[in-house]
Length: 553
Image (cartoon, rainbow, N blue to C red; front, side):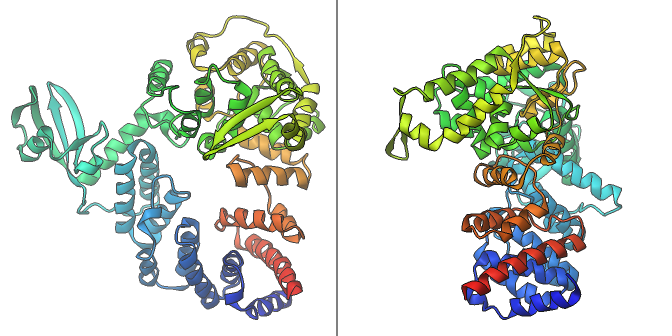
């Protein structure tokens, strides 16, 4: 597309009455204006958009990036005042990208206050990000904010408790639920605030000696560093564990974590709990149908988000061993055909084969009947429901089963570390681990908690999930990739798609494809390699969307 065509596209867009178009199209148009340098029109659209999408941090991030290109920093800083505080949470998507941008380009004081607030809210989750941001700033010779007045932090101290050296933040009532924090209103907090250096007191029958009162920002960073070091599995590679898991005591700590969760909780509450990883929470339902548990976990955004973790120690090769989760994932996302096409061999354990085949036999029985209670209503599932709603999925399962080989491990014994975790893994997962080790076949393990542990062991080959998805993308057609994109949009099941797929959706005459495109674009804030690529992709999508709009008129 040459410049003349860009100008023609722009003139058509400008002729559209902003009042008569959807906010989703407005987002697309605002991004397009920004890419071609039409700041005023882009700004006007963003002002309208943020009023409608106040809860979308990605939109605010785009707006800030646009303003930085065309306005002064002081003018851009004013936008920060309009961002709703309620959306600035530790788990908000792209929150740390937002903080780093604000810290380096707009308002370092605002950014430091925000990341400190998030650290107080979820110290175990935020600690590695806080450290990464500060290390990046230091590496890039950016000045750290060091003289802040902290609203909820009274002091940073180092003291001895019966001779044991401790470092703590003394904080207000709202933020003291952390082993590294002390409530400013409890006896220990009050005493530490009052004490002089080297002073000793008896507090709660313990001998306390104050060693040092530190600058608060120093204490925050050192505690964050300590949390990250102690809790390495809880860093960006292991974010769903807000508990301390030590390298030398992984199994003991994981079992201790599981004690905090009761199977008396409802299935839905346990599955939705982000504090446990996929395979671990699945193992809690020992009396449930394992395959149904797998389906529920894969289709729950709070349960499956660890899929986005890329960690692994091997790439896709000519053979894979699959557990019940990875087998179902391949069929659910219609990726199994691509791997068969690529000539990859699939191996299953008898336990995994039984889990899948018994569920298929159960639900395809003519007498099958299931009654569930959901949102105040009884939901009946019988053979007719299965044949109309699940027939395609069952066909996919059977198809992959027919291309898989059930084999036994060459050895029976497992390494000590694997034997120690047998109690917290389901039969399918444990047997797959054994088969992978014994027969030296790479394992497509979806659970990043286990991947993080196993990559440190020389005898387990764990496939890098991102590389795997990129590889199978070479063997999938658009319709198969679209199925993956739909499931990503509906259930948060991580997948990989290309910009050509977005353009293909824009070409479609199916309104459902337009809805999917809107969801994907709203979750992709300027995620382009460069502005040339952004210009080509957004222009193509806009042109196609505009043509549909004009045809309707």
